[in-house]
Amino acid sequence: MVDTTNNLTVFIVLVATLGISAQWLAWRFRFPAILLLSVAGLVVGPGLGWINPGEQLGAMLEPLVGVLVAIILFEGGMNLRFHELREAGPGVMRLGTAGVAITWLLGSTAAHYVGNLSWQVAVLFGAIIVVTGPTVIMPMLRQARLKQRPASLLKWEGIINDPTGALLAVLVFEYFSYLGSGAAFKEVLSGLAIAIASAAVLGGGGGYLLGKAFSRDYVPEFLKAPVTLGYVLLSYGLANQAQHEAGLLATTLLGMTLGNMQLRSIDELRRLKEYVSILLVSAIFVILTANLDPHILTRLDWRSAVLIALVVFAVRPVSVLLSTVGVGMDWRERLLLAWIAPRGVVAVTVAGVFATSMGEQGYGGADLLLPLIVSLVLVTVVLHGSTIGWLSRSLGLAAASQNGVLIVGASNWSTDLANELKEMKIPVLIADSSWYNMSQARLAGIRTHYGEILSEHAEMELDLSDMGFLFATTSNDAYNAFVCTRFATELGRNHVFQLPMHSALEQESKSIKLANRGVCVMDPSATNEELERRHYRNWQFKKTRFTKTFSYENYLQVESADALPLLLLSPDGKVAFHSKEFPLEPEEGDVLLSYVPPPSGQ
Image (tube, rainbow, N blue to C red):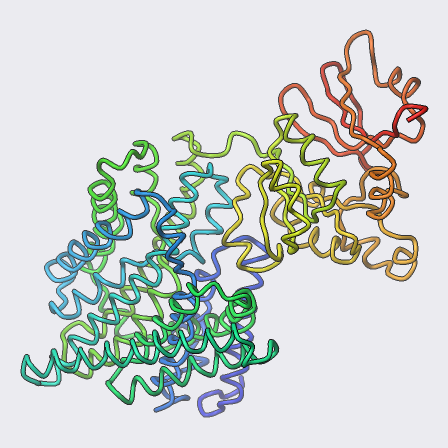
């Protein structure tokens, strides 16, 4: 076996490989990524001893983790948009205010009296467990197919609590850091004030100036994301120079400031997470869990087990049930929220960066902080992930129908199709990155999503609980195939469809034709351009119901030979698309939706 103890190159390669491999496996098999990342770190670290970040990185470990956490908290701050917080409803507002306070109080009390942690570490523990990570809850929601309201409550609670809990933990840590230095109370308050002021100036003020520079085109488009990342690191370093550990507060405020300035380039800035943060999150999870001391893990005794059980079975339910009194939430929604609260990325990263400093200042139980949080994450991810589907179905909170159609690509033809599906009571959603293309759909009252459907931002925003099919209708055949491939694992290979490909692309790219595409619907000639031409020639959608006296054979005899059958709706609400691979077999009571030419003379 290769000796990796002093081989930094092997360490970096192994961490990166494990992190990205865990992310891919999580996507491929629909597991929460945090679970596989944590297991990978525990296996190669305390388990097999292949890597030891404390020895291999030495003095670099703490500043490296700090920088990674700063970037992660910046991204979390960007997700907290104030207008969405106001629109999220009283239930989410209560969970993000009273719920946070109750969780903090009860969690801290349990950590001190049951977990035997010092009050300082216990209060920090209580602040950290406030966080319910959206990166963990979103895959669970997709798997459970929750109805829109309970799914929105869980999603927005995670989005709000992620930066809120991190900010609370940072402030708690700042306070006890100054208190632990032996300073007088006046000096403690002075140090805390300096930390908040430096964070406000560098994060809030600096972020505002940076946003204004972006909006006035002082920075070219291709440099906006790199400049933002550079300023995240600069504000983190300068704030830390002004006051110890104030950098994390500064980067969180920086993200909140930029995320609420309505910048035209905000989508490009959010790609920081997609292109940078995923790698950083993967690395930090592997590093933190691999760095856990096996001897410390053995100290997680019955007290630790009881503390984790109290957080899951008592603190969370009591917090939700008390904080949501009188907000008009259904008892079933409150019960579901009381149970589902998986912890995620921010909880582990914040615990990892603070535990060492708290230990160095002599606070009792600081060495148990990270193992406790990692254990809580693993328990909640496994327990809540395995029960959310059963519980939501038992409570009647899962989507009754999964026959909705997600149409990717807004055009005159696809908008007409969406209108017909809406009239047929089939849930429909149009997604497009062009605001103008979706104008007709918005005016018609059709659900729309503006943005890149393949982005992780769309993954967080989209409610696909009632969607069972995807239909890619853009003019880019390769993009349609890519979209179908992306959603095939979620919806099923036979539930992702696209318009027929142009013959030139079919000949040039057999790999797309044969393997990496959706099922092509209707006739091979029905490309995007041809359907648009037919739209302007007054082709229309037509619904035909089959009865005992009018069968599909009768329909084929009387309908135009040019008509294009598209989909079938059965009496029980099931949808089936027509394709060469899966031709329709209509029965009595079924309704056929076809695209037909205008009657003769029109």
